[in-house]
Image (cartoon, rainbow over all chains, first blue to last red; front, side, top):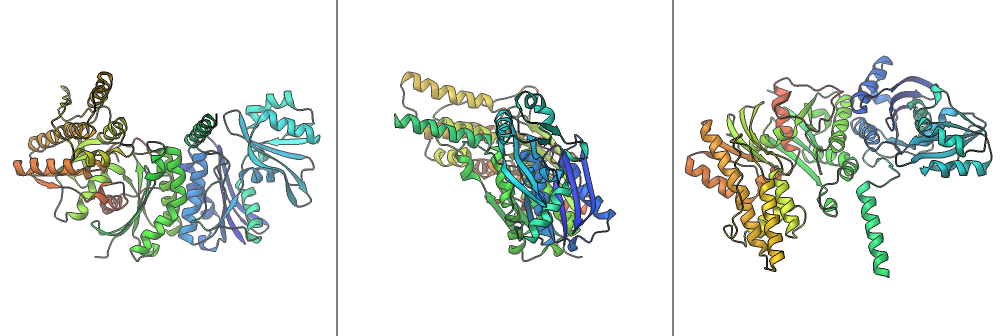
Amino acid sequence: MKILALDSSGLVASAAIAEDDNLLAEYTVNYKKTHSQTLLPMIQEICRMTEQDLHTIDGIAVAAGPGSFTGLRIGSATAKGLGLALDKPLIHIPTVDALAYNLYGCGDLICPMMDARRNQVYTGIYQFEGDELKILTGQAPKGVEELAEELNVLGRAVVFLGDGVPVYRKLLEEKLSVPHRYAPAHANKQRAACVAVLGLRYMREGRIETAADHRPDYLRPSQAERERQERERREQEHAGH
Amino acid sequence: MEDVLILAIESSCDETAAAVVKNGREVLSNVISSQIALHTLYGGVVPEIASRKHIEKINQVITEALDQARVSLSDITAIGVTYGPGLVGALLVGVAEAKAISYAAGIPLVGVHHIEGHICANYIENKELEPPFLCLVVSGGHTHLVRVADYRTYEILGRTRDDAAGEAFDKVARAIGLGYPGGPKIDKLAREGNPEAIVFPRAKLSDGEYDFSFSGLKSAVLNYLNGCHMKGEPVCEADVAASFQRAVIDVLVEHAIHGAKAFRMDQLAIAGGVASNSSLRAAMEEACRREGIRFYHPSPIFCTDNAAMIGVAAYYEYMAGTRSGLDLNAVPNLKLGER
């Protein structure tokens, strides 16, 4: 089984092709250039290098949120276009789960954190049990202090990774009472290889969707929706008095 | 010669659209998924919501366009996609989708300028129309007087200095309680009003004979409403709508006719969402008849944002050898005629 995988959820743009237990190619760039200009040329390059016939790919896995709204849509629209043209299914991989997969086999808790602005991170708490990635707390936007408190209650050593680390490291140091470390450069950002490996798993389990149905999972409403909901809630409260 | 089939994709604002166009002028399908009902809740287009809707609908819209045209991707000669101007997040969905299809299906890609698409909409139903001609582009985001010298050669004679004509319609509609979108609502209400009831200003710009300005007019309408309110006088919304609309149309028609005469153009076209306005069409038609100028306009379905017009523009680009790379990016402020 062969998977093409994409991740453009954060600052990193990454594309990979994996076939069963082999990673055939991975191209990851962490540079301030718009994913709109880099992602498809990167896909083209790894396919050219590995002489892919695109039609032999079984599915397209995409890191489908959370992340930068625009970044997610570039990845999703690219995956949807490929899926439409090749008539292949898509595999929707939660971004934070894929980040956690960077630390396969780690005995401690794994805590990816992506900068979500507004003093929050997209985060989750994971641990490996044998071959299985167990989700202790599912991916969600969360305040860093609340996250630190949750980890303190769990009372176990934890490894952090993700682009939220440099932003909130100081605050973490202040709030954490459990032993903690930070993953090194090769394993602390989004990598499409992780999306591909999870994608292979999902696909074997039949967890696929059509390219038409696929949409990213932003984990947050748009600002306009949030403000409207807030306004309606206030109006209801007002009417209740 | 073999038929040239363009699959066109448009997502620059709040319509997700795809179309198949044959040999530049024959529309085989024109599918538009409008989000207008959703944005009405917010009184205007919300960029993030528009972008989210595009990604939910885009594959269905493209598949529908291919199905209605009774073709498959393997029949398509080239893919045309709007890459600017527009809302960047919205544009990116169409651009990323188009690039992926282009790459995976091995079909050449042609990036299209949204306003050039609007102008090209005139070719669809007017088979005899060919450049040179003058075109007035009026929409919610744009007000341009353009000299179309050749199929791909555009010269902007005038543009708005502030609000687009359609934007002024939206703002005035909101002020008199009509809601969004303002254009069609004002057009309808104006039919019941007296266009000479209130005299609103027609802006003349000393340093740009073809440029437009609508913010002063908008302020005059708001001041008028405010004045009535202060004095406790009743407001006749229909008269306000008709008088405001007349002021906009007078300026649009005057500039367009002036330009056509100055550049010795015997053909004048209108394009863009506001080109659906019935009073604008009537006034333009009458003025052109008086001056012996042939007048062209697209049907309303080709005035609103649509992909058929993008397919027409892409055809002429494709035939001229234009090809876009897989690094094509959305350019929210893309200039007309920029290559």
